[in-house]
Length: 335
Image (tube, rainbow, N blue to C red; front, side, top):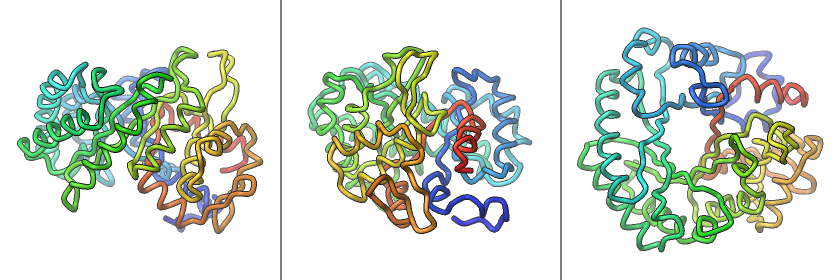
């Protein structure tokens, strides 16, 4: 994971390890709302930037995949392109599965058309509303049906991240059963897995109510850690640190808080109140990025611990901007 570039070498190894391939670029979505042409051009540019080590997949709705045919020449440049698609979803399992079947057809056609130059290997999609707060048995039955669709379609690899609204109701209360069902599903996958299932946490939006409470974000991190399943985060994470957002008139999450909380929770088996303390942290000075690891207050985690947590727990976060998170890291003199 280390770079031979002289400028990149100035980035502290623990920070580089924490943020390696961490940002899924979602320039098509608010508030950026870029055209597909502009977003792809940006992504192509970012792939060659000094901070390209932070960049991960390009995010777009599954229905926009056929539009990429126009950009075949761009997709032949450099390393193969990887995409994460937003699935159609559905309010109940039957509606979800019917849409999922159609989505798989679009993905298979795209992968075949672009061969090894571009591949969709991740889908992000809301958990059906009717399954929020449902029993472990109901979720397990749903995931079995999803697997059957994947097998029938011949899809070689497609990881699935189920977005869950973090509300202080059935969604949070049902986390344990949901994660247990997901963990059981993942444990039954062959090696290599056809599909790894995880959760997706939305951390912000256009309204103050879109920002989940720290208690609920900590509950998701702890429950995923306990079950041994991964999560992704998205929305409202342009800034590294938790801070007050004047536009939303509320406190918002920072991506360093989310990632550090997950890494420290995995290393030290932190309880929810301790995870909340990391998420509440507003001073970047309390995070120390050292050559041999990461430290927050009196807790430390080694480089190997950071890598492990990033590999199996906190996988990435989505942002409509690649430049803003980097600019904020520079403002904090971390880059």
